[in-house]
Image (cartoon, rainbow, N blue to C red; front, side):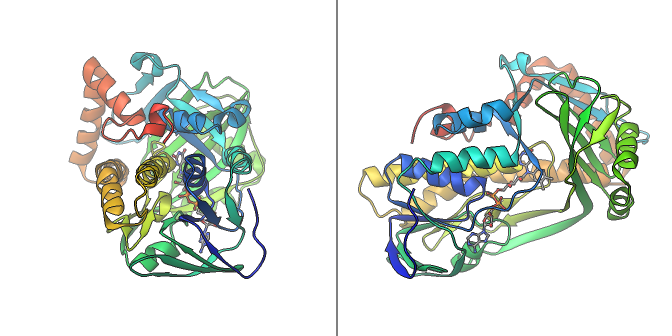
Length: 404
Ligand SMILES: Cc1cc2nc3c(=O)[nH]c(=O)nc-3n(C[C@H](O)[C@H](O)[C@H](O)COP(=O)(O)OP(=O)(O)OC[C@H]3O[C@@H](n4cnc5c(N)ncnc54)[C@H](O)[C@@H]3O)c2cc1C
């Protein structure tokens, strides 16, 4: 990896804007495939969040030579338990899914974002990849190229990949609009240690305010995503660590025994945001630049990594055929390959979340009944588990363990 001198006009085939996980995976995959790639991004800000990476994402990171750097920090997710903790008339039965049911060792692995990012950055540093450590300030597209102005000069490329998160400047430059709906919910995140073993089981309590999810970390540690109404979030935030630990013990019905909360609480207002398209005017969007979903069922970054794997595969193929990497055909292929996966996941998460928040009795009945059938009907259960972990319609090469 090289850092260019200041105020240079820099050309490459592809520029990736944003060095969060989706941007870094796109950059690593393209550089490893021999595409002349440039990364324009300040170093990502770190928080204490963790990410549950599903099996396909783990396979992609392994194929790219990143996963070995994650292994010491990742905890397997072998079981997934869903508990209806609402006090409503229609309550769903408790459901326990195991990875063994679909002949897998684990649904995936949970890892702190700081370790995932360190492994990605370490792998990027081994590749022929130019990293301009400055934000993109202005982006212009014309018929033959994209021009990106940044703190160190200017860059001209055939294709820009917008991995610049929910407030994407790439998306605005491409002229792509979004539809955003804010939920009356906040996700409070923190990591904790506990007296009892988590037994490699992720437990999701469904409450009237949203899910309360404990996800294993290595040892007797777990991460917590606690989705609550804003007023309740404020009440939890003013508590000191001991009081907060006690509140979590009560909410988790002492599942993990005595709890000690670690430093670093995070607060994330929840919203769903969908872009009207994900590729236009020589710009392709990946990750949260393309879609934001609430943290339910660990779908957000897993979707983002499938975006990254898909665009890398399509661009690498165009590169081999010596095609223009940002032409309309490349962009149309990317958009049509990703559409069904993004739309179906966003819809499913939105429906589940709204069925929890709804005061409408039939919505609770429908959710309870769905979980009842899923619990009782073996083949349906296995199809759903497989689909959740490895969506049949969207398995780009990297997710299948093949290089692009
Ligand atoms: C509480 C919570 C828990 C979650 N848990 C999970 C989970 O378990 N599993 C899962 O799959 N997903 C999870 N998600 C979702 C996941 O965190 C996001 O999908 C993921 O972080 C998005 O990554 P990204 O690379 O697309 O965007 P980001 O991580 O937002 O990165 C965007 C990057 O672009 C940079 N940038 C912005 N503007 C510019 C610019 N002008 N020029 C250059 N760079 C720029 C930013 O500095 C940033 O580094 C969770 C989300 C939340 C809120």
